[in-house]
Amino acid sequence: MIRETRTIMNRENRAARAKGILSSPYFLGAQLLTNPLVIASSPATEDITRLRRCAAAGAGAAILKSCHTLSWTPSGDAAVGRRFHRTPRGLWGTSNIARELLSPEAAYSLLTTARRSFSMPVIPSIAGHTMDPEPWVETLRLFESLSPACVQLDLFYLDVDISLPEAQKRLTRLLRTLRDSSPLPLLPKLNQELRPGAALAALGNVDICGWSILDSLRYAVPPVTTRFGTFPSFHQASCFPTASLFGPTQLPATLDYLARLRRESSLPVLAGGGVSSAADCLLLLYMGASAVQVASPVLEHGVAWINQVVAAIEADSCNREENPHLNAETSRFSVCRSRCLGCGLCTQQMMCCAVIMKSDGAHILNERCEGCGYCAAICPNRAIVPTDSVTNKKEKP
Image (cartoon, rainbow, N blue to C red; front, side, top):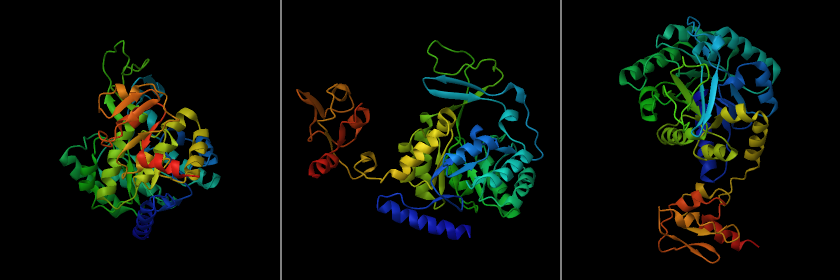
């Protein structure tokens, strides 16, 4: 059944994107979604009150906050709690494992209550600290009676470095054991330690139902702070040696993972990480994501953000004139006279010499323009657009 659904989904997605539209079905594992916005495993999905708010706002699905395996008691003082700090690089967050993970029993109860409360699909997420398959299998079987569409496997908390080849071999054996031990579809979530090539090599031949990308970027916290404030300094949390960076900084890495997985795998990709707007969601969908998972903007702006983005995605006709950066056939750029502010930013840049300033604003010299799009990317008023967009607008009655 999973393979049949996957085949149908891939065929319809390819046909839809060949036409430049986004009318194809959206999936979470084998679960058909009403819209592509999935609330990622996060504080927004760790209790029924917040899950109800997400469902009421129109989210397509949600992934529960990860639970630890049954035989694992996470270390750390849960009372210490979370700590956040915003810097010019983005929002940093840190905590300990005891605070971040639900118990399996709490996750089971939460999933049961969610099913009785609303129709929005919800799936569990399991995190383990060891490659020993027994606690993973034991926890996976706990959820079998609820028959979720799939189960996310959270690899963030493993006590081994899965960037190493030997650890990746153990990961392959772990997932094969899980696949043979339970009928529930498996959705591994990749993180920065498991690059796309390594993930494809380690898990490409395991019968998983798709890929979940990309977990938050984790970095060591510097022991000292500077007056520039580019790295976090957490109040009363010196015991935390690492922190995760959230926000738009992560989006390029997500795009990289998505492009590689779509190019070399036929499995659906639930993509997220660095998403902050409807435009980001559409970009991921255009690149082949089966659905988009978000957390940071929902945590910051509340569920109103969900409603606004879902409405924007549904209303968007995916007209390439309004999304010129998605048109790979564009080779030259021009200045839209009604938008140009004459600020000179495009002429001051030193990437190319194709832009000059005249009395009526910026002009692009066609003989010098190679279509790189740098000037369009830095224009504060989006006055520089593909040449065919300017032509099309002139041709409209």
